[in-house]
Each structure stands twice: as C-alpha cells, then as structure tokens.
Image (tube, rainbow, N blue to C red; front, side):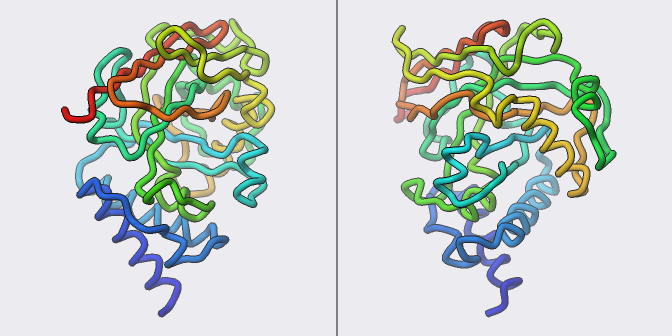
Length: 265
C-alpha cells in the first residue's frame, strides 16, 4: 500500500475518533514513526474536513516546546495544530468531561495577532510588533490515540493533540510583562500541581511564536489579524479529573480557570 493511501487511512481513523469519541490505535501504524511530512498531510486532510463542515479557524497552537519532550519524541523542533471556535471555552465555564479525549491541562501565554503575517522571512521585531496583546491561557490537550500511546507522527496527525482552550479576560500589552521570565503555577484545590516559567517554552514564548509564524507562512495557513496563538506550555501537563477545577496564574498576566464537569454529565 502506498504512503498516500496510508495517509488517507490514518486521516479516516482520526476522523472516526473525532466523530464517535472512541480513541483509536496509534496512527504511526499507518504512516510510520518518523515521517513528519506524512503526519502533517494527515492533519491537513482533517483540517479541510473540519473547515468544510462549518468549523471556524480561530488560531494555532504550538506543541513540543520543551526540549526534554522533544528529546523524548526524537525531534528537534516544535509542532503545530489548528484552533477552532468551538474549542474556545469561557473562563470558569464548565467543560463537558465526556467530550474530552483523555484530557490534560497546561498553562500557556496566548498572543492575539494584530495584523496578517504572510511574509516567510520574519524577524523577532515583526512578531513583537504584530502582537496586539497577551492573555493567560489553559490548554486542555487531548489525544484521540488510545492511552496516549504517541510518538511524533501520532500527535502531529492528531492536530497536535488538541482539545479545548480557555483564555483569561484581561488583555496585557507585550511591553508590560516579561514573557521569558514570568513565573507560572497551576493550582487544584488550592495546591500547586505544576510550576514553570516562560523560559521553559523554547527559551521564550516569543521564540515559539516566531517559529510558528514562519512555518505557517510557508504552509498556506499564515497567521491573520485576530488569530489566537497558544505559544506552548510553561510547565508540566497535569491530568484533568472529572469535576476538577484548575487555576493557572502567570506573573504579570493574571489568572484563568478550567472547570470540568463530572464524568457522567
């Protein structure tokens, strides 16, 4: 069977998981463990399906921004996935646990883009000037691959293991906090369950965003005015429990909460 046929089969498997809520076997069984181009081709098939079905693109997410995670998966750069309007959950609004795929939460800095970034030869100055404002964010990651049994091709094909995202509601200008040095903590029941800082995200969330903007300009999906960029985790992921309330606090940005329903809702 050709790789093109394998890509289509892998996309169909993940589409079935999206539709039914039932996790599937690792996608690398179809496309291999290291063919990143094939994995993005799988993602692209389902991106087109989702957009054609009426879902609205609202931005991008960056994954694998921690060097230790890159090393575990045998890669030397981050990955990306698409964000859609129906992934956006209001701060404190209940997230239906039954619609999550083996959820975990991580705290991130979200950047909202002020103008289109279509140029491939972007610089850090371009990125800083293109950011309208920043918000604290919680990404609810999820895997449609059973038991989170993933390698790099599995997560890329699966839209970078996307789920939902929650944004804080107090915009902060990029010059009013330090994205690299800001501290982060996630709390559950008043106790810290994850700690980190901006530097854990590829040295700085701005570094990750510059990488993304360049890649997206080449991919045919350039960042546009109003897009949200989830720039990458500032610390370790935390398994989300039914009925759990997770608050992320980021120095200089404030806080944001992810609230999960009980499992039987």
